[in-house]
Image 1: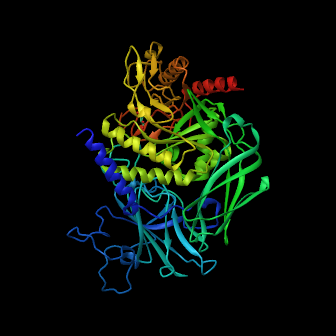
Image 2: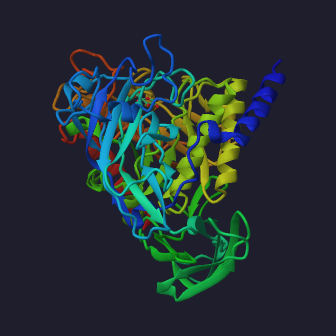
Image 3: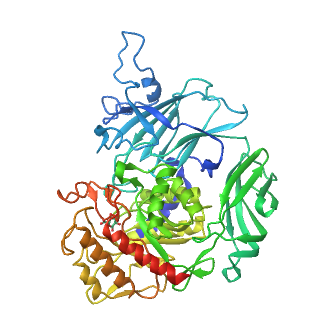
Length: 618
Ligand code: GCB
């Protein structure tokens, strides 16, 4: 049975991967933020529908083909005898992008369905062009209708998706886009019912129309190939390679790849799916955390031109080290949730990204762990331009349903969408396939599958997952079997918070079974900002400060494959699980910054540690 179970899991998941359309939108358009788009952000009308009346009749049967958009489109009916019990109205509007929880007190803890409606006029620039509606993210399930026709559905709260809009559906005037958004938690979803963060619902990221010619550049990938032994900050004769995917093209279509600054241009011939290429650059200035140099890229085919700006760098593992451009690098990191705590909402703009990364910078970080799901594209774009390396993760969190092949397919899809969006971003150096998943053969098989998928999708980055360790006063041994499959072994440890006092760190010994780089992917202690007491008093800033001092001393004694740390966490964040009535009140207090935006004492302890590490590097 032990062997049969994983076998069944592999077979079933293979079947689901072959038929991903059951849960899948279309192949993602790449880098939409650098294309000309038409924003559908702004005020949308909404109907809060906890009983899903727009979907089910009074016997709780699906209403079938009835279009929920049209049904409710009329608002107050002109016919005074009409019986209408639901309707959109301008008294009920909500901002997109935005979570609903922060926009009206009635939504604070709401988990369920909300219908969104946006009216718009749109005239295509060219009648023969194709049109797509693109969503940065909707948490968790989106059913999308335009002018009464269903465009499609998408599950997964943190990745983008799009649908093509047929000419027969679009009108020049009076279009209405309806989205049924449902953020109910479920056992067979990713994440599952249990998380330590707020389940913000809604159309949480940007929405836009993207117009393309009939034939367009759908996606591309470009990365540095030159072996690290030959890399210099400015490398002569560097080799890059990658692939281009066209949509609407036949075999033989010419595709041009251009880097204007380097005066390099190459034309290749499109085959059928992803067409591979290799190019020699006369010289290239490498992207790094110390010099985030990027180059404009233009990929063109027929009448389409895709613009991007990317950095070239190499990230690898060599024995116990992580190498950036061939040189060992220490990751001075911090974990982040996608939240603006001072405003009790999800982060979703460039400004939000700069606020969060600005704090990380002040802390002397060169690395950020985006926990525990893919964050919005603004933060990754900002990190690319600032030179902050990133860990990006899918929400395979705690105990999801590891024995269920459909869950594996859902996790894989989110992995694919995360990688599809950011594979050209130099800042992303690690894909993480999950966090604190409990050891068992079924779970390890599940996670191993994800590691393999990640490697197939992108062989140029490191794969990891945040593991757990069980404390042992004699010796803490990192031996989770998943560590055998990842490139970097990462572990969350809270010695001095969930186990004992910070002084326990003084005698703790660490050992890892794996001869690979080791990242401490979490460590932290709670403190209420502004609460001061002696350092033995839990929840005081002094306790947290002491915790960090002891942890840092312990880090200095870590095995030599210790190559980075991302303490938990930059800012206090909301969590319905955290109900200490005095110190938490719905907040996880492990932030180095409070929910009022004020830095706690521990912030400065970590800042100093990172300053020392940075000095040694120079
Ligand atoms: C963890 C989890 C993180 C929690 C954190 C905590 O290990 O990965 O999601 O929020 O601990 O505060 O306990």
